Image (cartoon, rainbow, N blue to C red):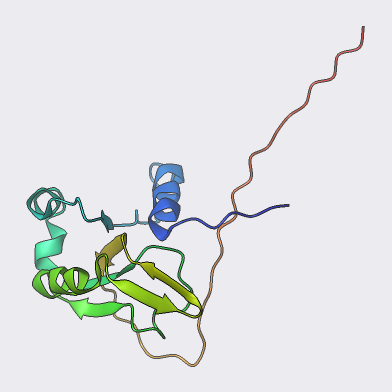
Length: 136
C-alpha cells in the first residue's frame, strides 16, 4: 500500500473532522501561517494566541525540525511573529536540499516532563471500497 506524506495542519484537520461529537478527545487547536496571513484576522479568530504560550514550526515535511533549530517553544505571540518573520521565505539548507520556508503552524505549548524516550505516532486512514459484482 502506498503512503503519502501530508502537512501537519492537514493531519490535524483530518483528526478534527473525524472526531465524533461527545468524544473525550479534544480537538486540535492550531493556526496555519503563510506569507499572505493577516495577523489581525487570525488573532481575532483565535483568541488563545494572545493568552497562551505557543509553539511555532515550519509545516513543510521537514524531518528533525527540532534538531535543526526550526521550532520555537514556549513563546508569546510577539516572539512567534518575530520568529516567523526571521524564517519566512528565507533560504534554508536541510541536508543536501535548499529551499524556502513558506508555511508555518502555531499551536498551544503543552509543558511536559522530560522523558528518556520519544513517542512517535503515525496516523493511517483507509478508504474502504466495496465492490458489488453482478452476474447476468
